[in-house]
Image (cartoon, rainbow, N blue to C red):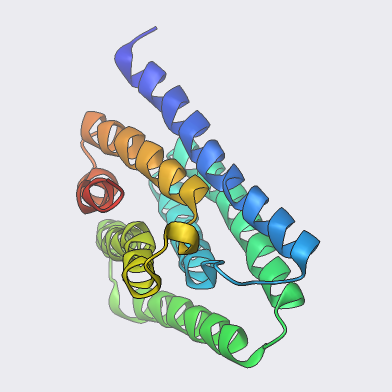
Length: 195
């Protein structure tokens, strides 16, 4: 088995583990009927990133990206709607979700209106994936503010931080091996932020 195949499998496994790291969070929400310490904005950002990644995978004919992002879109959407269902206060999370969906739609309207070729479309979509990848990978770092304010690490989801670190490493190596800057570049700050 060549190196790329090994890294592809490692990327699938670590990404699915990252996706699964949302399960304990959702189980806890359902059990306690409480959304405290749940990173809802990470769920929304992850849905956006997965939809963009799915589109990028389809357009670049990359079955690994397509598979992972199809599963990711589904799971992150389930986590998002679980949060909305459990949340006692619906206004803020619904507003965040509507804003996220609006931004995603604006991206696709932009792509439809302002890209003239397939290559330009792929580059623009890759850039959006790069930006949202950075946002998604840096979002858990915002937990540090809460840790400092509360003087307690109870605010941090260790399963999401650990999953994010593993994903950053494998996606960085995978993106580098296939020479796709839109895949490996956002994982550099993502890896630094998860340490």
